Image (tube, rainbow over all chains, first blue to last red; front, side):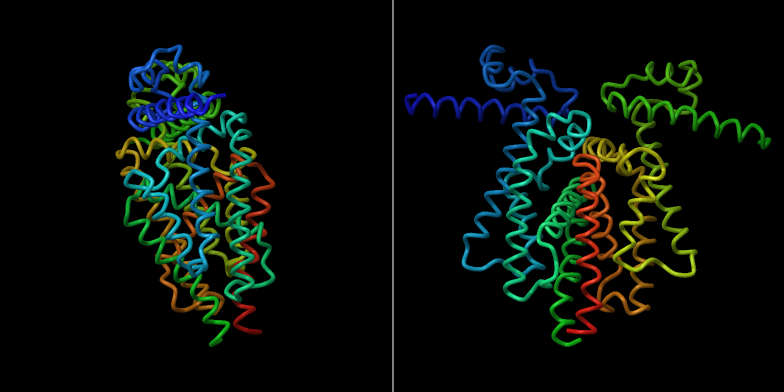
Length: 203
Length: 203
């Protein structure tokens, strides 16, 4: 396929997803109709359906895109010479996610999680990317263990799953309770994670 | 008011909430109409509207009831002679929540969080009960500190907020990814929280 055409396809796909994002953020997934998305994107029904057969495909693609952005954020940290200290990792990830747009991180995520519960196809479609996120976090745990700032006996996969759950709850807290909740969780995480090496040194 | 009448009111209110729960679980909040709730409850529109003016009032009451059940679970732990070890507290709370019904804890919660983001009145209505949950978890942190199994320098309020976020993410993981995710988080939390006292003793 010629390069211009692929670029065009990707730009068109992006244009539709951006329009769907605006609609879902404004009215929620269920109160948004496909014609709302056509209007917001300024495209015909046929032009949109060529890329996405329905709302489920749109929310799945939005989830996949957002989670892929988190994978890229994690990869950027893994490529850097050093990871942030463990107690700064999650606060930095939350700030990185928020920098992607909006006043709180991943504002579409709670709607995605609700839909995943009701439509296992969405859960199935994002399972691979969720696995990529967990794999990167597990790799970070291994590096922290190698650096002696995380207990060597911890299972990196289990620990990564706890971090994913904490990130998810943090997203909910920040989106539903505001910036003060984020700041309190940040302080709490710093307290919990900076404590361990100190107790090993001074305890 | 006579006692029988109050009991009747409470039973009727419970009957409507149970019907709304069934409808929301089956079709989701947005695809449920008030007539669906009337039909499920076997009550007239007037009988339901006397208690709940609309769907937002129903989801708020369901959220409030579920969170109140968590407060009662926490109070039961606080009344017991001893708290579970820190690494067993959250796994036990998750099992307690699941025992209230369903195959995973708080299956309505992700829908509630989505709605809280779009309707600040819901967030406002449950803020008091959320504060009660955090206050109980902070009290548990203080007891753990007094027992020497949690670092004395940690702020109980900040730590409680982290626990709330972790519980929320855990609920999402269990509901969207199944029992295996719950078991992995349980193992991860046990690893992270049993580690600290050991490092203080043997480190």
